Length: 256
Ligand code: IPE
Ligand code: IPE
Ligand code: MG
Image (tube, rainbow, N blue to C red; front, side, top):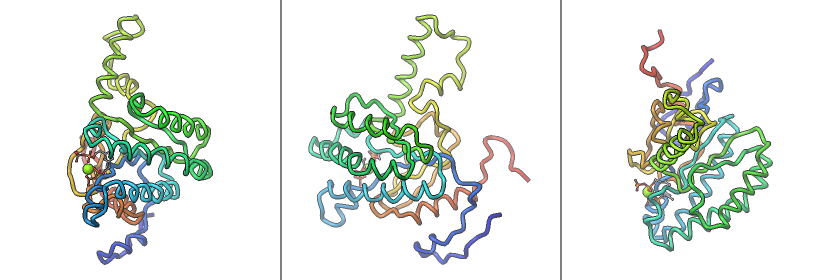
């Protein structure tokens, strides 16, 4: 039974929103944006914005676990983010290593399964190593799947899939006739995950920036001006609350 809390536009009141626990999105995907602007506002270096962003990751992962979300995909580094100054890229990679190292025990205790999507072969080898270590250690857990999008791009993913499909056809492992949407989905990095139910983007931009292009066909979009380091669990709850009050028709008609 869904009950509604009478909140008065105050962010902290979102804490008290009664969510319908039978209708929690199975897969939440987040474009964590605004770290740089958050830091700039405070006259801090951008790197400190990214560092503050890691704190938000901790809080949101925990809350998703509490709410029994099954998959949380976090857009951490896009195929286009290599265009940034070398120092920023290096700082981001360093933060990723630190996060994995410092957080792995806690994530394991929280029953989280760590996974990734994207072409990680371009990441520094130490990042790859820590990532594989985290995935291996948590592979038998059965709680939240924390799916990190690293050197991820939707177009890159599709290009990769097309190449694999072409290769399989050439090697007689696949026929042109049997290609359908399910087969294509099975060639993507997200092959054993459901499509995201909701895509959240922080910091005001209303674009996908090459995130989950195939998978977002029927995702609900939710944007906020809040910058990622300021995004708290009550913002997440508000996003889920709004999601629960949307009418997902998938091209059909509204259910009466
Ligand atoms: C998001 O914050 C983090 C990454 C893209 C890695 P940004 O660094 O894009 O922050 P803004 O958009 O410049 O404020
Ligand atoms: C998207 O944010 C990528 C990540 C959050 C990792 P960007 O900051 O890179 O996107 P644009 O450049 O504003 O589109
Ligand atoms: Mg940005």
